[in-house]
Length: 275
Image 1: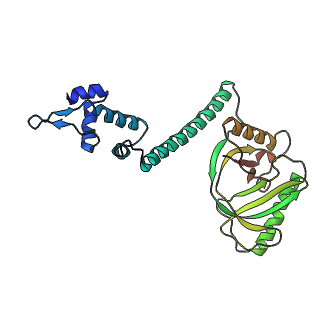
Image 2: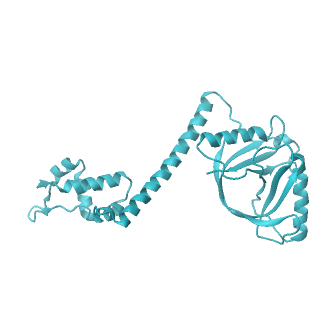
Image 3: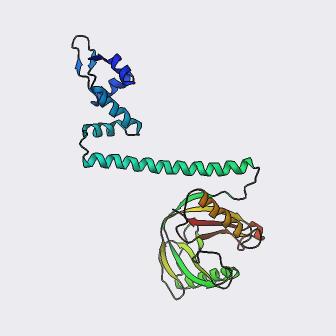
């Protein structure tokens, strides 16, 4: 048998740790001298100590380690389930860390090249919300503003007491899957406090919660400084960070013609659902 000090050296751990494991019942000494209180361990107890240390290094708590080592090596369903769940947790943490590293590499590379970043993408979790929705085919993007006004008037006429959520969330969802100059399939949405009375030309529906890659664009919608540059940046960012678009892109209009004198001050958030 080995006294606790010698056993700690064999197991490459501390005496304090061995005493802690003893208190928890994880690793009880083979014998305790009644006269001196010295703890003695058998050499074969190194196998259990090694299991405990390995599981702790996998990130299991001492309580979880206790349950696992108590289950023995029989490969019970509970043991396999615990180990599988831990592996899934580690995989999710690794994915999150890889994403952070990728975003940092992109940011660092642009800074090293002395670039002034016009855009900075972020990931956001959008909550589910109730919206009034109207899907239209537009001849051009210039018709979008007028379309919003017409739909808003129709909704207000049918639902005079209906209130928008605060803060407001208004977006256009583009269902074409690619950029189009004409025959644009767009769905106009405005978040409201609850469903109302649908009428010809609009309906109420739930937008599900979704994770989006997002970027803010300051300026006009079209032209050389328009939204096309922001979309190119955002889709490039999505690809370089190992993500995939999972649904139709959205445009959320924060500032526009209704409150800005110049289109240079318009502020639009592009939102692309990702997985």
